[in-house]
Image 1 (cartoon, rainbow, N blue to C red):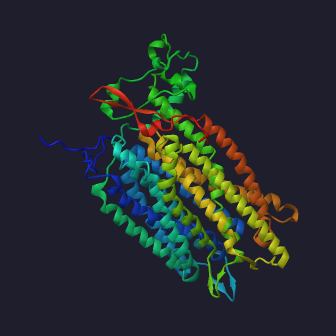
Image 2 (image 1 turned 90 degrees about the vertical axis):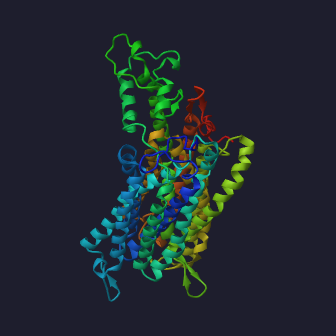
Image 3 (image 1 turned 180 degrees about the vertical axis):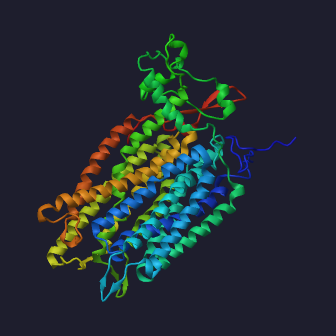
Amino acid sequence: MEIKDYTKDGSVDLRGRPVLASDTGKWKACSFLVGYEAFERMAFYGVASNLVVYLTTQHHEDTVSSVRNVNNWSGSVWMTPILGAYIADTYLGRFWTFTISSLIYVMGMVLLTLAVSLKSLKPTCSNGVCNKATTSQTAFFYSSLYIIAVGAGGTKPNISTFGADQFDDFNPHEKKLKVSFFNWWMFSSFLGALIATLGLVYIQENVGWGLGYGIPTLGLLLSLIIFYYGTPSYRHKPRKSESPAKNIVRVPIVAFANRNLELPSSPLELHEVEPQHYMITGKRRILHTPAFRFLDKAAIKVANMEGTSSMHPCTVTQVEETKLVLGMFLIWLVTLIPSTIWAQVNTLFVKQGTTLDRLVGHNFQIPAASLGSFITLSMLISVPMYDRYFVPMMRRKTSNPRGITLLQRLGIGCALQIISIVFAYAVEMRRMYVIKEHGTVGAKDTVPMTIFWLMPQYVVMGIADVFNAIGLLEFFYDQSPGDMQSLGTTFFTSGIGVGNFLNSFLVTIVDKITGRGGRKSWIGNNLNDSHLDFYYGFLMVIASLNLVVFLWVSSKYTYKKEIILDEGKGSCIQLESKAVDNTPLGLQV
């Protein structure tokens, strides 16, 4: 009788039938997903990279308003995934949530292309004097942007997680392949961003905004065709609980109800279901950890309650899942400042570049937003070097399959971001000196200083993202409870969103405080007569303080320890991919 090689993690096809490991998943399936990601990133960065320029030159908004509006929109794009992930984990699953949301995303891109193409939807100019956008024009433009944000809410948290689902954690070979997945996933993302910052930004400023937005819209449609073509190859992870988020809420409620009870001396005396339950359901059992010990009271057995009216106990695994979410939340908090630093790339870095000499040769002028391509190029170079050289080298030293722990990777990224802001501060000091020397204080005066002075801050920011952004995505996916990995990934997206909102708040507050009493605002409409260097210095200080806090929090973090149950032998085996990070280290190598 033929024995079929079904996947060991319970993966199914779109109709809920078990799938063969040889015919589905792995990089064969991921190739279709990677194609979508490249085009989607091209569309997103085609809008985000140059949006502050469009708002100031076409909608005629002032600097602070345009920066605030870009940050608010970007923040929304990265916050809506919380809802999209919840819907996927609780109701529709990743595939169908992505399907519906991607259509909304495309609709938003189509409307945005119309908003920048049709004369009736754009502000008018007469004799060199341009009117601000009317209320209806503004409403249509921003409605299009926020429809994109809604669509992104269902695509961002689910497409990368769906990609990671194509690898079977129970298969040693596939588990090894999965270690590199997020590195190469982000590599495809960087390719899309590179096309946007090099090609689309130039088309928008020199050929037309309609064509500059129309091209990524068509690309996005093409990517969806590629995605659905690969449907027979995809693996789908069935939900193992009706509403995993409910358990996260229930644990602290039960722990509070049991607050007056004494914890048993040994964690083995806490409530846990029989191993057969995990064998039957396919869920993974999580080992007890000493972190957030007060939550252990939720798992005190009913037999130990001596007739009290306390609630039915939670299992140790349910308690540990809640601990994981709390631990990730603390890490999330100390990644908000790095996200705020990143928010400068599409706002103040671009405005800084518009004041400099952008000519190459006699006629070619570089769009200021195109300098973002140096971030992408540095990422494209750094990802293969990290994956092929850095990881194997560190693996030999640490015996960690990842080379270094996830939190060590994040810490290095945070430190590199501080170096990037130091470069930005130094260049701004130089720019202010040149302005003073040549008297180019007018709002439209070009400072006689090449835009390539900004290149170091972009390059270092790109290298930092290889450690920070990819590390964050992998960390939150890896450390999430098994049934909540879409929702767990939204820790990554929401951190970027809150970082954008935080930057919007800081820019607004700093402008109001420093501009009081007729004084020069640090971030005025005329950057040639402002003090952007002071703002960068302020960011350096808060980023350095945040790094200190990050090191302390990471030193207290306890990594997830899952076990699988070998049904044939009746024994417990700790997953290797989870065991590699079982020491609560900060940045110790």
